[in-house]
Image (cartoon, rainbow, N blue to C red):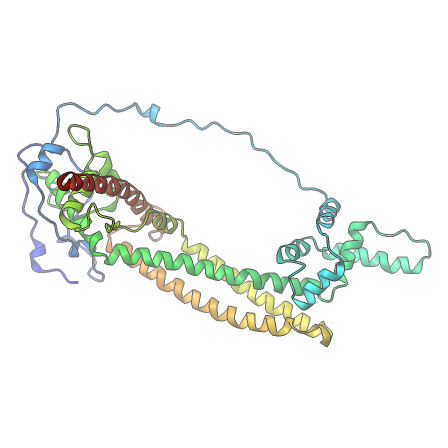
Length: 419
């Protein structure tokens, strides 16, 4: 959206009849320098009329200064807790504990791995077996002992843990097969988890950028803020404001201390813009706080790392599966081969699609931050989801609390009138 020539002139100055409590926002002016390549939210926002008399009666300056605690009292002391450190058990103990927890025959384990039947031996057990399998040097020592013991008549038998590890190595391609089986069970879920998070972020960006109710709320805040900052050269006559003011609206108290600026804004919105105010059909207009919190925890670089690891794991799975195909007897090839081939084919397509989706959502997110004139924090190359969504999360949480209270008041008022 281009800017009209009228934007070259400042907005008309507002002069309240009483000195007002200030709203310490960072003013955005559209007639100043700006990047024309992308639209801005403040080009779409219109300021509704506000009740100047009501605003002045609630939020004009009072002679009594608000009492605040000394800064030393506001800083909470954290007691350093003693950290408990646990040492890992010795190797033989670990294998011994695993053995005592498994009520299975080695035949059950072999059947699960070769037939891919997890009805008796589940994936969690296979994971434990894989993690406790003999390391290459351990395997060498065990096999060396077996070879030597065959040469001697009265050789001593291995201890139970060593015996157990040896029996696992007798399962055809134990390590390679279990690696592929476990990967098959985790990769699909990992890709789905990334997809779900990206879909959530995409949904929240869409609401913030395109929902008319969000624009209306911002327009209302702009109109009220411009009135309260009337007469101030650095804060007044704003075309827009930096979002970091949103969570601070609740801190501006009314003169009688019975309410705050945010609750006033919510009440004004419900009374003037929502036909369902005070009814069951009244729907919260901002993205849900929980969705915004989850979006704030997202890190694009983590997705890039996760997808890189998934690709590496898929390549490793192909390598391990190839070893099974080469070394395994024909009778042991199925159902492993068909199962893993199908999995690899689908997983590689899913991986490629998720990489594309990540790129799309990342671009969409950066467009959204530019739309709201949010700049990266010091040290950030680009705006992070945490920087952007944390502001919205706090604001939406406070807004929802006020929304519920104001709705209840409207409902009570309606009942009084009809009753």
